[in-house]
Length: 61
Image 1 (cartoon, rainbow, N blue to C red):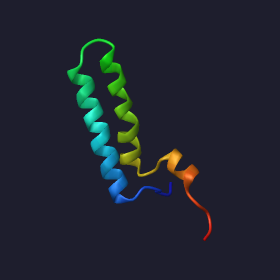
Image 2 (tube, rainbow, N blue to C red):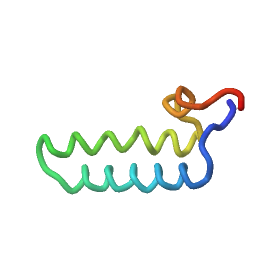
Image 3 (spheres, rainbow, N blue to C red):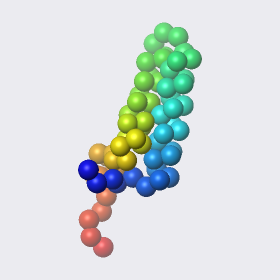
Image 4 (cartoon, one colour):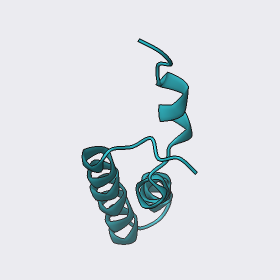
């Protein structure tokens, strides 16, 4: 798989995902479930590929 995220994007996604997951572990009840959305940026940071970034990528000059 070809990577479409540079190092800065991967770091930003990793930090955002880690913060969301940490918030999910800290909250009680239904608020904590929203923090599980942190899994998505973590997965894209680890893979180096994001389907949404590939949709917005320009082909050509």
